Length: 196
Image (tube, one colour):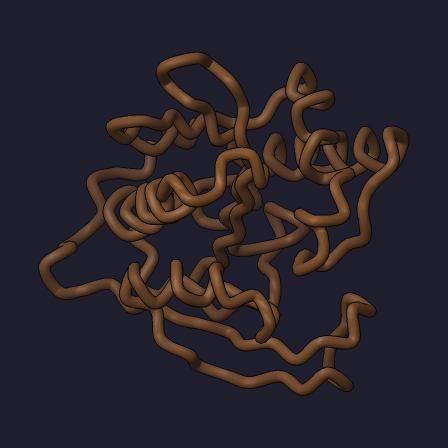
């Protein structure tokens, strides 16, 4: 069993469940939210299919090859205000194209909760979890070039631009240029605490 990230001062990050479907639709179906995501706004059926796929991938995950989605929950109210994803493979337990020792990170927060630092808090907690608990050496994150708030968030966490992709290279069909950012585990992070 893969342990959850440690809660932050204001947030809990827990695995998504089927009960989160309606909460996910609030942001995954929102054009403002999905403008800089790899998919268009999702309808109810598409959202349900996506969630089932993510739950199936999580179920098949191992400590080494995983694809996990997290509900970002306000500790004070229990409200799901966003979701996040950490993965080494898109079809676990089989390895994916992400280099060995690396993992990818994605995150989103509903616009009603922007401007409060929740995205940075959630992403920072997941980076620590990947480094300290999973033993990941490098965290990668893709972001469309026009998404300046997300780029600033990554840079505030210490990520640096690693690779530029032109609009013609966009495989998601958004037609936007993007950057891959990377953050290498600092030596002080030490070995992982365990692979339970």
